Length: 278
Image (cartoon, rainbow, N blue to C red; front, side, top):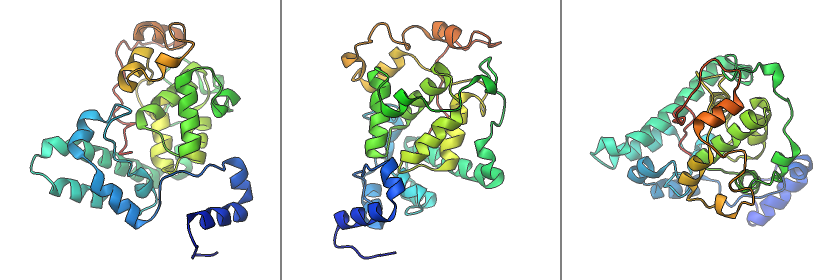
């Protein structure tokens, strides 16, 4: 294969010609630049203290280092050392270091489990059995035509930009698995097809965490939670506002989604395991 190109456009044209099947499936070109120089520039821009305080918000100071970590352009240790060496206030950077540790944990599990990460690690805790979930991704979710501005925006952004904020990933995963009752594997395949940082370990085990096949209860959310962490940017323009599937208290939504579950969860899920330094 060629290794020298006149410019980025030349590289993109070459890859499209060499991999026509991939281009036919997803012809979008993300703005994220690859390479060590781009990774180092991104690394210099991270704000560890702000990350810990704002990472749950879509406008928060997330690092966007995940594509470089995914392909080994940066190492977890390298990021950790820079963050720890930049301050003596360890508590202010603890959350970012913790998320790096979670990423390392997923990789270690992957090394042990191999292709087993595609199998349910535990039964669903939703009151439904695996056979009651559909195997295929619905077309309206894939194409971003559900009519729900939030879900359609997440779908379109992922396919266009190759990246999603981690909170958006969890909302999209929860909607697919719990509202549409589709097996998490369909969503995991879909994410890996489009995400620049699509790493099987972090991806699959986080999907299982949302689904409850690798956690003690399912992750779900409501409109209030979505509005809080997005500043209402999707809800304000949604024609379904006030009568969409996400309306209601956690208790009401849980009763509707999981009528056969033995235990009710009455509080918002704090996404600990599913977090990554994205």
